Length: 421
Image (cartoon, rainbow, N blue to C red; front, side, top):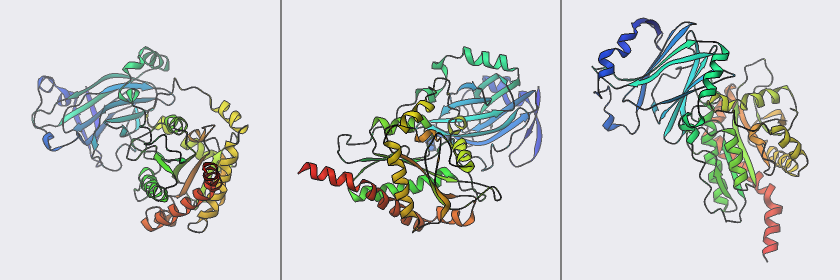
């Protein structure tokens, strides 16, 4: 069997399958790799190659040492998921944006502390013929190898059906997010939710800046400001480059009785498709306030699909939550905070011409926690991007949001103080 490979540098070459995993390689034990494992905290992925056509494909990733892997497949869209121990990915910035043959594209990153994931999008249903890793040998690095073959949908779905849930990789064994400290503290708990993370990079600017990094940096500044007031407990759904499923973000806020949930994002929209600059705040609604709100909600709600999360067991209760939410005061509080926040933000940063919007964001569906999603700006706009990566802008904007939170909670904090007398 021979495959045509495209290197990430753009060069094309041919390689025989036996060169990748021939008898000598299969029989070899752990050998010397290009980097010394003793000096690394985690294995390093240094190169990746995709080869094949519309009938069969091979995916090969070079690693500094051999690792254990677990694989499973998902439908609608068709994906092959590989879970492995935490890996340091030192791949070219454009790795995975384009594939070849059966493989449309792929992505990689953390899905939990100690665990990484590769998600391969395929053009149609596939059969995973082989999936294994090889130890370093004969001067060659360790390798992860996947062989895919085109199949029909019925066979693909059958293969998924026979997989037991206990076999579905490390992500299914994910620990719950650690609870915030001092859970008995009477101060309101503010949950900050930096969007995306890990395998889900979010949007990417033309210069290569990633949404997941921009919003995490901002959330940390905002957390610091809120903590310094001494009025609130503050927790973050993620404080590092880790992916957190949408449902887990909502559960985190609910289980710990958050008083406010703030999801933080940055948008991207090519010119000519609407206003492409300015901050905005979204609340939950069954019906989107406009086409742009609907577009954004649809895009953000695909985060679990991007991260290769198995949604087959997720209850389809969004509609029920929306109906329930409409009957509660939570929605009123969410809109109230959104208006307060816009009033503060307009002094320090440009706003979208319609800065308060609503749509069916899954991350806002907690029926008992006032929740908003803040789009700090557009990474596709040069001026907005300049703000988003500016530490001075972050400080000003975080201070404005802190003031908005103070204003929002002032009546409740005053009532609590009076009641304690």
